[in-house]
Length: 451
Image 1 (cartoon, rainbow, N blue to C red):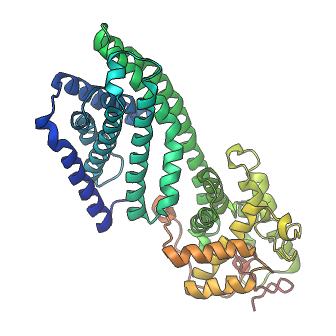
Image 2 (image 1 turned 180 degrees about the vertical axis):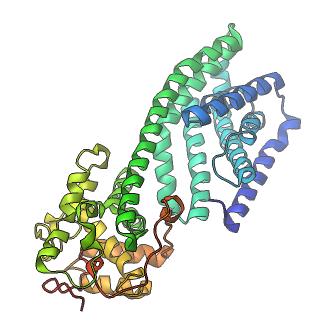
Image 3 (image 1 turned 30 degrees about the vertical axis):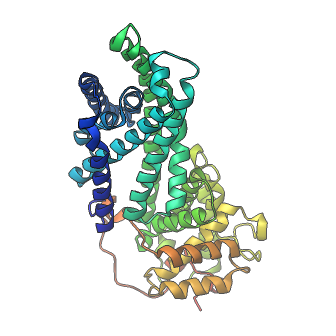
């Protein structure tokens, strides 16, 4: 995200101003500066290792600071680490400043709640399990603050629905932050004990193990994305006329899934399903995909095998889950006139019904060799007309609602990452690329020609 919208920059500036307000009382509170300096150095060093090697963050030290220090002093702890942290995407200065302000506000809020509930006294007296209550409340506030701040930024920068993204971020981060909070509490108790800060550092060993486990998950997820991108690039190379179509269908499927209230894990599966829905084209002879003129009945039958080819190609990719059912059934129709099996109504898996609507929508709103793109409102009107016959009305209503609220702004990265392809020829007469795999339903399937 090189170009950050102006509203997101204003939001970041407001967060910076809020962080400065939180730091203002430093001159009026008793601050153990050596503790602040040690925790800040520990966080800065750990943060660089975590983000480069583990793809995590050093929240244990931040929460330990919230349990040990007054709120303004605790807000100082993340600043050096955030301002010097590794940034993968630009603009790096803005991202570092935003990260510093976000962390400072979250730690300040956690420290205020911990102090209001008498947490510092329980830490000093090692009063377990009584120390768990203020610490738990502080972790909840810390998690909520991060989710709200990050959710607000993603809403403004990427146009995501605020309530849903904030809830997703909170739920997804609560469990790992609870573990970090417990480790932070143990660190704080040992820090205040007769054994001192050196013994507190021993707590970081199990935290390192948890980082390693998380890093394995992160690398596995990156491998999943690489697998999907390789398959999509292979399809784009073979059938260049629909280049970018897969990513757009994935984006529209994701929008429908979110509008239907699906959890983020299932939303991701639907995105995979949309991206890979036409991967079966790899099993279709290239001469048919690029044939000039109408298809013969036999050639059409070969084309209509592509959902089954796609299902077979993805058989061994276990992380796709129910996305494979969408790959197999995305050309089924509610009235039973689709293929490959002529399923009717609720017999069609829900992911396939989502992808069918997303696929038809992008087919209508994209320039093709046989037609110019329709305006979005006309495409939505056509989807509504065919709802109940070709498409699930719930999916159509969800897409209409979300596009009416957020608009349609497809983001396609295929052109940036795919290898160079031969120049595409000028638009030609309807041909094999006008196959049912990307057709809008108004197709004469008996002749292979369009109405």
